[in-house]
Image (tube, rainbow, N blue to C red; front, top):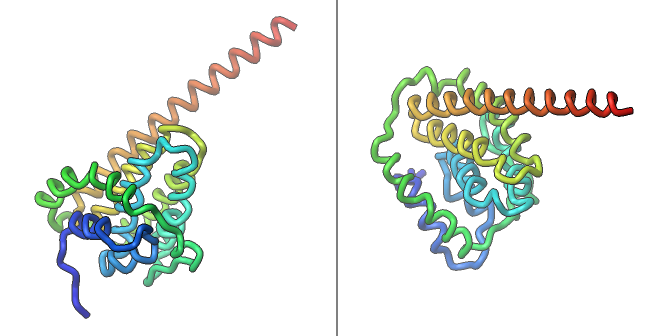
Length: 206
């Protein structure tokens, strides 16, 4: 089997230059080849981050992403996606425009990335990443404008780290995930407190 040695950024750029007007998930899976789950997490995470302001887009992207990260969590050897998911497509011109926004920083990160800190890319780490990414996907699919940005970025970073076997990228993903968890907890506490104060105030009125 011929191994594709193109940088991931080049694969994305080549996908944007395809002949048909639609880019299917099946074409993406075949193009990413041996890069596998990590490449799909990176791609879908980046795509979600750049189109997240469009209502409903994160839910559509989140479904195949959820199927992928669950398989990472349960340590499935071979990636499986249902036929209906593989037939899902994007407008290729829109894909080209959106991906164009991230190619330059992606190429920079590719140049400085290398396999390192192998304990952060091993089987146990992959399972933990799969579990956390599953939770992030569920949050991603909630109908909250702009709330998708950090879950998308975290999943993309995890995917990049897995694809490159780069433990430093994985570590950065965990740090951002920890920060995001603290933010969500503080936001929840704030909303809960405000709701309780409002409820007590209303009870005082009546």
